[in-house]
Length: 178
Image 1 (cartoon, one colour):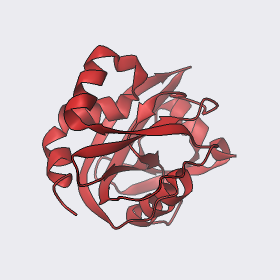
Image 2 (cartoon, one colour; image 1 turned 30 degrees about the horizontal axis):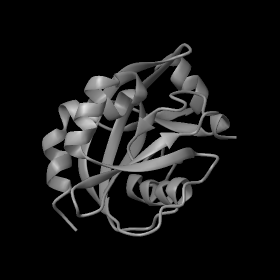
Image 3 (tube, helix red, strand yellow; image 1 turned 120 degrees about the vertical axis):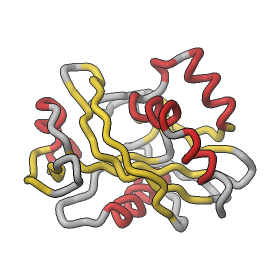
Image 4 (cartoon, helix red, strand yellow; image 1 turned 60 degrees about the vertical axis):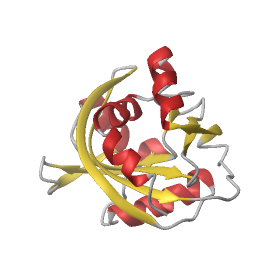
């Protein structure tokens, strides 16, 4: 069960300071390492995932293609590749785009306090979401995404809203690469 996994606790410099059970880290709001993947199709569209309705937080919300946590000892890029394959059935070359730290309540007494390594990839092929991870997917232009977030912010995960607000230049630049 995912809630029993451990996350890597870090300081603001991404130096490992310990491990903690994932759900406890989210209850305590402790800073931990995370990964996110942004996938584009080279036609100006981003892949969005609808989080599975049974997730322990942010259930049913739209987000980037993949987001998770590296296992202890697992490099962020390897975690990003593994989770993209596990969540969306996608294998593609990923490249580092940016790193960010955020702290945001996600409901039910849980707080995401993450130092996130964000990667991007170009992909044009079948998307096969794992039904345990996602309730669907959609391709959307960045302009459509911004409009949708403005109209229905609660329909999107906290971190995805933050990335779109604070890192739009990096996301748009990543969408130009193949």
